[in-house]
Length: 206
Image 1 (cartoon, rainbow, N blue to C red):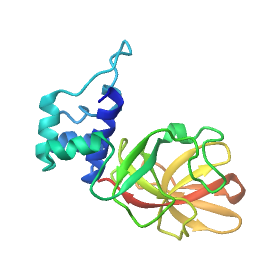
Image 2: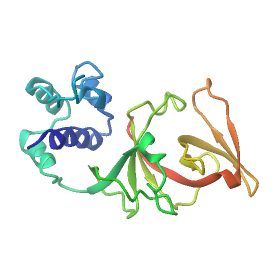
Image 3: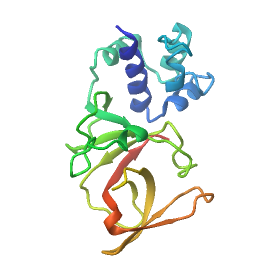
Image 4: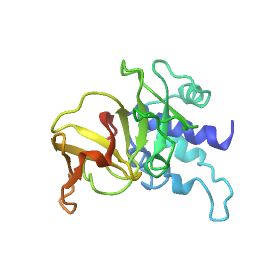
């Protein structure tokens, strides 16, 4: 068991219960930032490990045994499979996605119940434009290449490398309208030629 494995197992435990890392902490009665990625390294760069108390409370809150958590540590889960997980900042990097919008450079994975779709991946939300539907740190499961229609929740990447989670508005050959749930963010109208790909959101932690 190493530092990366235990934090991946905590992330998998959260997703297994339909929670973000902060949602898992709240369910366990802990400070919401306890399991956040910012808490996984000390200011001097040294690895920071979760306490046994915080782990025990998270397992109790999710009705998970230590044996089940050990299976997550080992990358095993009763049903489901490992899928790539990426952050939105990494998703903006050139060459990170293939032409269909599937990540080709993701080194990290998260175990997730099988949704019956082969080409899916997990994306960690950043920013506040989709609050309160999605908050920073929430996980969405994305399916590149799936048909999209007005009103769908989508992840969009522009040709300039911007990646965003939005609600799809009007879409035609000339333009694409992207709507934020948060009223502080106005809808965006992009020329269709500026959009590299649009991927449908299949599932999101709440």
